[in-house]
Image 1: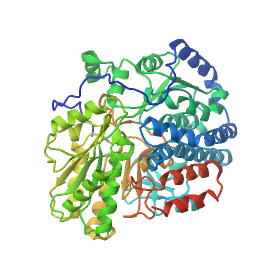
Image 2: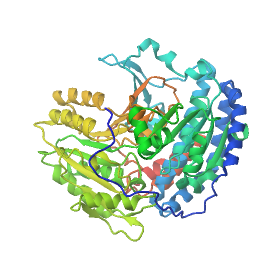
Image 3: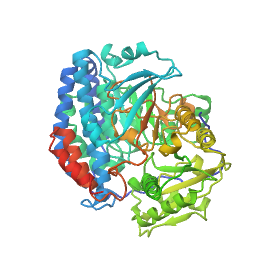
Image 4: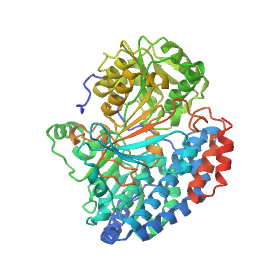
Length: 588
């Protein structure tokens, strides 16, 4: 489903919003230097697309070696920038979403290139099967003993486009390596909320699509530009990557540059529309008649109102506690500046334990420290949602520059134009919506209809269902249909769907089919080292209660040393690193 721009009258205050960096940042790159960068890449584009897998593999391996020594510095700068103690447990977010996921992705792409050198395409680590509806799926996790230990009980599949036949799957993989494309220069407009976004998008363009890249680091991430440059120095020295810094001036200049062939952006749908169609009344008129000002191949990841569908069942007190922290963490992580934050918690209105779960979520939010509103415009957006919902519940003491946690509970599913369903708050705001249904199977059916039809976005969604309920015959069928029908690029069962971003082997992007005139959550997939060419969605399944506690849970006391050890393991593969990982995991 695609939608027109919201018409409910909810208006965010106009930008631009002030941004005051907490750590020193480099100056914006002059436009003439941007031009030189494009010219240098243009000269390397044809050479790169004809470079064999072994030399590219060696560059990826070299990048692992240059990134590993930066784990501590990367974590420290990111934490300080976000107002978090760089030595405290909160800094684990930065270790995870920065160097860990980058090193894991580098390792996965290196291994895929080894497979291409040997066999012409990456090796699928698990089973490939045809679902009863004919859809082809490929299991991508676990890929070995380490995955089984570090992601205990987790399984991940990639579901292919419905038209793909099982026999055609191998030929659909790694197509740019089977038939080299013409040399192209890609512009990557990096995201500003998570430090790994730009580096991972660059890796995808370089290795999977075989395009040379100019990365424009987002101004909110400019404090890490030198770290990213040092990490990716092997690609820079090879002449296939240039890194520049700037705002909309540099972005617009490069997007329109005749030497730039393709674009990828992580941001908002408004930014996409401004680049493609222009701004103001003229830009809106262009969008409505599909008359782009910029008509270049464009992929994008543009945000989401992530639904958390809670299937009614009979939960123990321990299970209620676990999932209250689970859901609260989805909001509190990165201060709520994630397109994977729990924005709409969908519950069953008649579920006897609904109030108990909500009370526990309230308790977790009240216990968590509030966070610095470091992302531009957060205070204005929060204020707009507060004005729309003056009775919303607030939790936590918020000193200057911080925002409390906001819960809008009991929001009617019929309030179709409510901003909680139509506008990405991109701050510390979540809502809860009770759905009326006679039983768990009926609830699943109605909840899927609700989020597919009324909640903006198609990037990622989470389902939570206990194993006792999931075994009921009617629920078995309803749950399978729910995973199938959810129009999202990632669907996770009993696990935060942000894992689809972090695992590195599950393609990440919006559900296919969004036209550029209603781009919603975006178009295209990244994080695809197995180089599947016909992806529909990634599906992740985990135990109802994971043990040990996942390190990204907000109250995990030893997540920082655990994730830094895991990042170092991804870099060098030393089994002794896993002793530290296990020791810290068990302290949860």
